[in-house]
Image 1 (cartoon, rainbow, N blue to C red):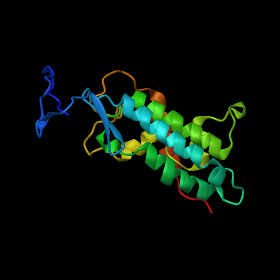
Image 2 (tube, rainbow, N blue to C red):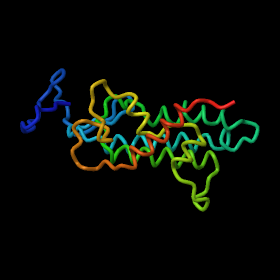
Image 3 (cartoon, one colour):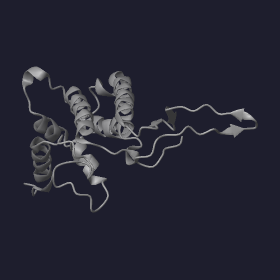
Image 4 (cartoon, helix red, strand yellow):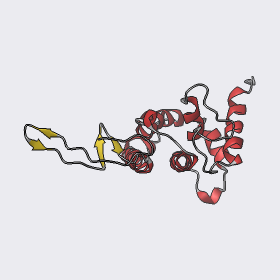
Length: 186
């Protein structure tokens, strides 16, 4: 796949191998990740959510519905299988807040199913994360951001200037951090 420099028009390359011209494609899957010429990760985020959802559903009978397994064990399996599937190859993503919101929605929905919190219970998302003792996707991604990246605005990337960040991200993030850093009581 050829990607031109920013601002330059795309010109299709002609590559031949043993006299056979290779077909040019706009997107393809390589090692489980969707790569595209447009460098848009919307498709990749949707694919990752679909694969993680499938992994979550496959574990329903053998793990989630097993009464003899503790919630701690279930959450460890969730983190090892579902979260790992969800975040596969995230190092290559340029995440904007809209992607983080989508990933966070999936994450919280899974946690609600695991902990057996129904929407009728009207439990806020921050409490769901506290009960599971897990950070939001936003917090998880910020831990893996390169040093020196300006995230003071609550945005995940320095180049996101869409105005898509909200104060609720920062508040949820702060609640989780406060709880994590609180001294343990005897």
